[in-house]
Length: 216
Length: 257
Image (tube, rainbow over all chains, first blue to last red; front, side, top):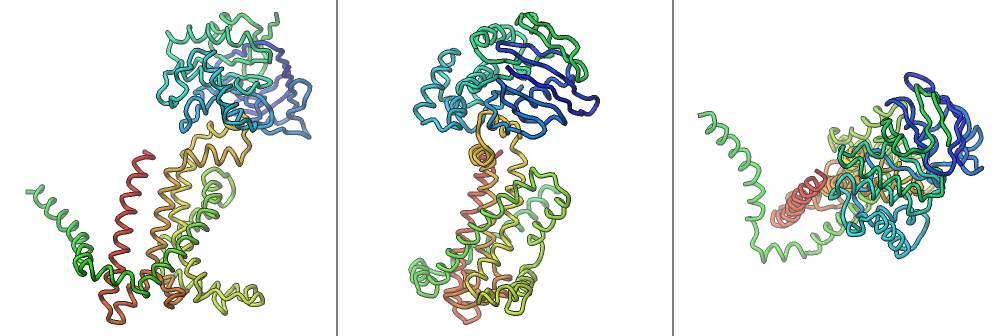
């Protein structure tokens, strides 16, 4: 469970939220510039709140005394443009989180291959990110985020970089994959139809505040 | 008419650069070149140049890399001032740089009260050659590395962090790797500048064979002593290295583009 009660002054308004994200997928929706990405970055440790507390499974990630750096939070993040490392092949991209945790080359490769197979892109192991289509990149980014068993998964507009025809297919695939996870998952989207398609709990953010929060 | 004039002017300048350099190669027969280049004098200058440029390049990489990163990413007061200071040696005349180093690190220089008690004498030693090369060469590396680091998108570093890689390992595995063409290009230029260093070296380190006499100094001394053939042989070595560096720098540029 992710619990956060934070405030941060942004350019046009103050982000001020008190939220908890339970296991399973929560959609974080709202118009562009409502503070959704900032909220995600605060949970991941990429941005710092001005005040407040962030907790994950009872462990304090940030408060007035503690600030656990991003690389020690075990919170996976799928970036909007995916940010796949251009100098590494797909297998090394997916194995990266395991390499960070000191796993052997063979352990990295085994886990990475298993995830690639699971997402139906096993044949791309040796490809470079620039050779992949948008949908393939998204799957590699997801595999890279999950291969090291994070304690939470954050996805920032995972469909924004895809064209419309691909978007619906990828959305269905992603929903199926995320449904099998046993950790809190927060998916940010500005598109209301995504929220309907996923069907899970929704948090709506407007100008830095929670405008609506529905629970199942 | 205009096209012909442009072509004529362009040809003139290219020939003006190429012909004098080519005459260096024409001056000696291959046999004479081989004999000169393996002579003790030539070998000594070659050795001094290789050892000192290896040292100055190592110092440039060790000290210049963190500086370049801070200049590319840091937000601090006086960054522009630091930036300007680092660029200065590129435009300061080498002889002036040599005089400045002498005033700073010479026997009666600014650092003398610190160096004296330690019995460290820098001026007119091999170490002085290294410092002169560092002074004139490092800015070329720092400039290139700063641009290289600035071109690495921050999101890759953030992705590395969220995947569990600490800052130092992220720097080595992501930032440096992505900036590598720029870093390598800058290192090659800095090394080339150090290899050709003359003015600051002769002012601050002198021209002592076997101690501070690098290839460019040996070329100068060869001419001074009337040994034009030795000067020409060493000049051929330097021009050949320069040619290789120009080609290498272009290859690196193409890779980073």
